[in-house]
Image (cartoon, rainbow, N blue to C red; front, side):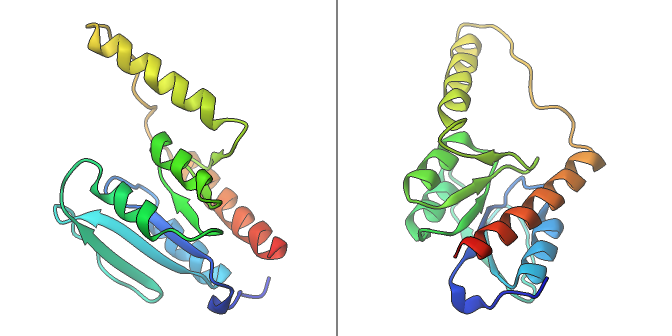
Length: 158
């Protein structure tokens, strides 16, 4: 597969504070020939690399999400585990992928948002909900494969 040129305009924007697949994203971007913007609060230390720009935002809970939504272009790919951010990304005609390789789309985002809302109600009422499963090497590999495939498919579509 030939690397794409950056003139095509697609970028990868990363909700990077707790992202466990930063290196995999960098590798996929190099292969696909797209640039990466990692958005992180000042509380986290990230290093710039070839084709990777670091944007630091205030440590507020939604600061990274707001930056991403405000700087997103149609056709960009956003890597996030935040369903709310993913919904906003989809509304702006961009693409969203979870850190476990789940492609967020019109078919699954409403269900995911509903599930998040129900879990929050349970917790506010004093109940307990399960957290995410431990991130594994298999999750990392699944993300890498899905990310590369998605980038390739999006570039073919463009």
